[in-house]
Image 1 (cartoon, rainbow, N blue to C red):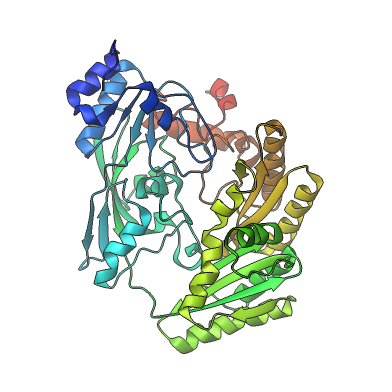
Image 2: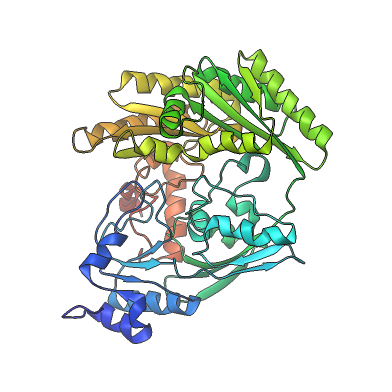
Length: 460
């Protein structure tokens, strides 16, 4: 398990941890240099902690060696957030899978390696569930969800990860443990969404709620994507609060249909998937009818799911987008913009026009209810210009900013959108963000090179 000539870092790690918790062979370390979209630098060593005490030991060893630290969960992220940019110690949380349900408090106590779906599965026997459900909920982990403040199809009605965190434990850059609640200065709220740049989160107390008694589902297809956006805006203006509001454009729909053969309308410019839910069946039905009316008035064709099985089949289409797109090109850049709902029709049309004018295959889908759109640029790095891909992603980001939006709703900034921060945030605010980073990580050893652009370093 050790190298021929152990480094001081490796020696300290093996002294403090069990041999099976420290990976030093090159063949092992190579597996920890990438996330779902980007390769980085091979780490010096990888630690697989099983407790907060193990994390403390790893952080202190890295500090003594002057080595940066990159926290890692399932590595399903889409912004380069866990790719090491220099020789680092990777702390992989996949073995920290402790999970306890406290039904009397409607809480779950979860370590960062717990797979998101496991929380709801564990809570279900107690008549509870955990609403944040990113599309990768079968593989993504709580730690990654915390780092990115992940949302998911239910976020419009129920909120995102941060809305369900009641308390948080993290290890700072010196190896000290902190336990935070959500009162006074909300430092826990600062850590959530910080992408591992301010601390390593080791435990979270999560709020659970009772599941709704009734759910209704519909699918609507439109001639063009702007109509779907108009329908969403109209339905919400009429008072509907669906639990799920998801859309796919024609390129996305056809990719899923090629993959699964679900009978989706191939000629539709856009497909909208909607759930309404609640404890009063009459209200749930009425809310679905508000959405159906808005869809029809926008020019859409509505199909209501008659059975739970039919509803599950419709949502299978949305859950299968990522593997379906992976069959088109070997790589994709997944944008994650958020815009005001009033701007949705213009934004989706402008992005469609950018895609049509580019040489790349571009698809759009996302959580359209809260304006969180995922334009995906498909490409083959062996034959296509990655710089041109990045330029198109920048143009898409500028569309969001121009319409009063932001760069990310849940995927994070990472490295993919770090340069775009210069367009999204004014210099004074960026300097303030650097002040926060320096206050909690003065040596800049926690996930360096992520979120904040380097250009501001000369202004400090």
